[in-house]
Image 1 (cartoon, rainbow, N blue to C red):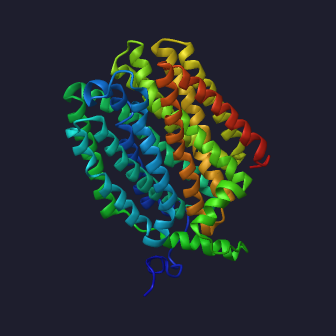
Image 2 (cartoon, rainbow, N blue to C red):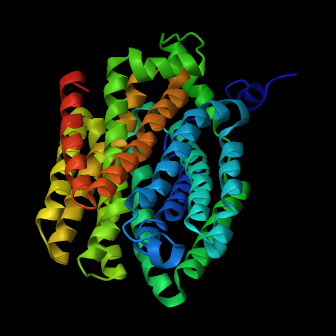
Image 3 (cartoon, rainbow, N blue to C red):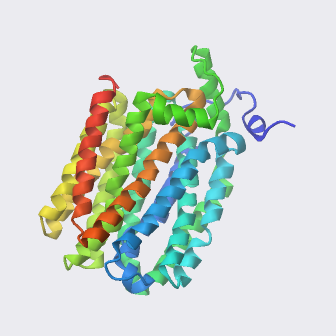
Amino acid sequence: MASAENRIMGEVQPDIEHGIAINKHQFSLNLIQIFLVGLTIGMTRVVVPGLAESEFGLADNAFFLLASFVVVFGIVKAVMNLFAGKLSETHGRKTVLLWGWLIALPIPFILLYAPSWNWIIFATVLLGFNQGLCWSMALNSKLDLAKSTQKGFVNGVNEFAGYAAVGIAGVATAYIVELMGAKEGLFWFSLVVIIAGLVLAKWTIVETLPWAKLHHQNALDAGQKTKPQTLAQLFKEGSLDNKYLVALNQAGLVEKFTDALVWIFLPVYFLSQDISLIEAGAIIAVYGVVWGGSQLITGPLSDKIGRKSLIVWGMWFCGLGVMAVPLTEGIVIWSVEAAVIGVGMAMLYPNLGAAVGDFAPAAHRASLIGVYRFWRDSGYAFGALAMGIMAQWSQDLLMPFWFVSIAMLLSGFWVQVVLPKKS
């Protein structure tokens, strides 16, 4: 019996062509999937940390426990990222996308009825499965559809859709919980988004493995021969053997320290400065919307000028922006600093993934991007764990800011030293 992969991919079909313009319908539908995935994660960005004590039973100043839900999320999403590529090569992109939405269905009900913080952590486990499977598949499908010269643009619009949604969901849920309460607001918001994602994935998305097969065939025709490799071999190549992939993977891991800081500690820090949940949500939304919108420029720009300089300066912008937050005060100044961090993330984020695609052979691109996404999202776990321990030990919210800023500056320097000049 033929494997599922062979049944789905088969021979290259003559009517299949690469290019965003010619595949704009499916490309757009997968972009909507990313937007919905971004809304799903964005709903936790302000409300859950900001109201962890009053609504979800977390003890006052329990910084390590506060960080625990992001640690768990990072571990689960990282593992899902690692296996999602291989799973999709066997079962198809669409099937794995549907799995991700099905796993998310209990989340709204857990948020509504959660009697303790442990239930929030369990909901976060399911959220990690959802994000790892759905985001990976919607991205890989768009890369399948696009030309190989459009990777920067694909990553740019992908991350624009996702992180603009994160910012929008953060401020939207802050308003909704003011009207309905935290649990009820999160319940209705998440239920509508998850059902929409599942329904659209089932009835509008087309399997894109045939387009992936054509990429592979084109690479073979161009003389790019690759031997079969196991996931373990590819993991070793991306994590130890290939110095360029190692540099990119460590940068992906460290940049998640910034996002973990924004997720866990920024809402708590702003509330400790006596501003409202909605005001804190608005500042954090600036970060997400600027990050998302700027990627429409930085992603395509990297296709023309190269990835390296954008990645390096993006890491340094983030490090300096994070360093500035606890040294200043005022909603306007914090909003400007949030925008600077957002610009830095826009410079580095889509281009790290695109750079991995540049160094990965077409036959193993999905798996090596999965390895990158494993290390990148494990940064949530490593960063949140380190920051939670620091804040708990010192009972001070400032130490995580210094830790993240220094890590970002050093990580950018690693990329500057290792990556080729024209990359």
